[in-house]
Length: 305
Image (tube, rainbow, N blue to C red):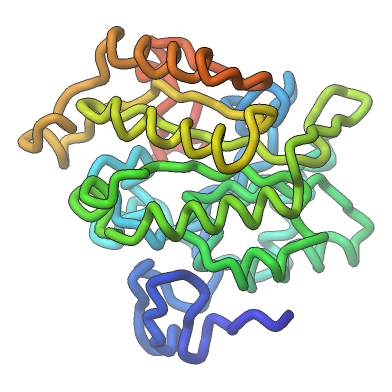
């Protein structure tokens, strides 16, 4: 299936801006060049993703959501971008292979929705150089099914974040009122491709499968519960899930209750109880105090150190 190119009437994501990104910026705030914020070894993903050695993560600039509370706001928001480079392809591949040559088995593309053609090119270049890393697609789930279908057979591991079942919250906090419907459809497509089985390498890293992430937000327990009920009722409790507690308010939401505060222990416990009662069989619960050490600083060469 052919995916619309970035340069002409871009419709890669559900916003369908239709702009020529050679000359204008889309909703995502990026043009046609592979704007990269960081190519880094990252050890903070789920244990089966990072393992003890880490994953080579490529952080694209820009995003097709405008979350007020984004932990990656330094690179996702055009007006605040602190790190952005347009590498030549040989230079970018060189940076990636330097990490892979350290024995790293997988490569993660973070916020890739608006850069899918560039992601495909990177993977093709790696294959031409006889590198075949496990490809992890780390997405906010605001995706077009057509784009996801074009990735079948190319992506090994889907790592989608399912943010909202509440459209009002999605509109107010991420400027995407249609997020719940879009994400439900997108996650069903990823599930169609990968199902609920996880496959591993000899070293214990995930080689194929899908893990659905969800970040608990302050004052939004009902939204979190609705997310997991959907997954249990519409997909399967055998689906691997990752429940995150790392929400950390940024200065941008200091005057926007309830986003101005961290989640409470009781809010997190309520969601944990619901996940357990629904009967999910495989997953990870983040430590409640994870907000203190999981947020990056992209002004540093290694944002998560």
